[in-house]
Image 1 (cartoon, rainbow, N blue to C red):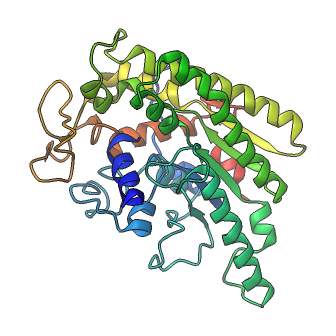
Image 2 (cartoon, rainbow, N blue to C red):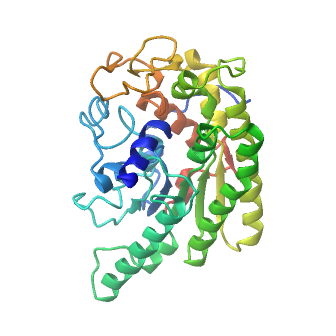
Amino acid sequence: MAFYFFFFFFFYFSIGFVQNVYYPVGAASITQCKKPPVIFVFGDSNSDTGGLVAGLGFPVNPPYGRSFFARSTGRLSDGRLLIDFLCQSVNTSFLSPYLDSLADSKFKNGANFAIVGSSTLPKYVPFSLNIQLMQFLHFKDRTLQLVTAGSTDFINEDGFRNALYIIDIGQNDIADSFSKKFTYAQVVKRIPSVLREIQNAVTKLYDQGGRKFWIHNTGPLGCLPQKLSLVKNNALDHYGCISSYNDAARLFNEGLRHLCQEMRSKLNGATIVYVDIFSIKYDLIANSTKYGLSSPLMACCGFGGPPYNYNINVTCGNPGSKACDAGSKFVSWDGIHYTEAANQIVASKVLSTAYSTPSTTFGFFCQ
């Protein structure tokens, strides 16, 4: 019961000054990649393509998935996530969740270990980053056993060595600290421990032969409708976001940027790309109308109406909730996660290389 409650809790409580240019995710970016990279993803609900549903049978009900898949796939959005757009940009199929036994996949293009609610700490609680790494190591070991036995249907040693490893985690570590009523100083004090877990993960993957890493920082947590509806009496910034939450995210991101720089100097031969998701998403909030989006601090799917349309007792997909009209251009889908429309804009910015350090195209990882 405690195990189930952990994920029930995080399903509802979990969850990153540049030019305002929209770079469409179009055919041109797709056709440039003739041999797509094998991709492995570690993270939380921002990247989960159905792992929570596959692993625990946890229901993610319609209208989730309505905009692209016309059904719920376990993604916490009305359609595609950032990782889906990135996969499409290099002409590879969507990643199957590692835990999905009915995915009809031999994981030739990689696997998604990201799970809703995941964080880096505590490290031995499913499905922390450390647990996801343990799952990957088991997956790799079993896969190579099958290859050694003569199978050609699975990723071989070269495939693992040349794969791209994506890490997008940390948001829930910060959010969980605030939800436990930690002071701002206590939240900040915890950040080095979170960064250490990310460093450990990259080092383990490097020791396994991995050399290509794509690491996202965390988004503006203080701009989520869920946080704004639940956290009272907090100072808001110019755009209506909770200043302390975003300040903590910025400190985490600065630490992560320095960590990536440090790892580049220590891990010989590794390509480590740091991606500034915070700046992209904060710009989307601040200048939503320039992107054709509206009500950046209000959920499309939820209950309660303006200003946030979020009620912890009537969340999206549950009785009493209501979604905005199909085709509406909201930033937030359910108060925590982004709409497909917003994710597509975020993806276009990521693919522009303007937010990556070093400046690197995603197509660089094509084999």
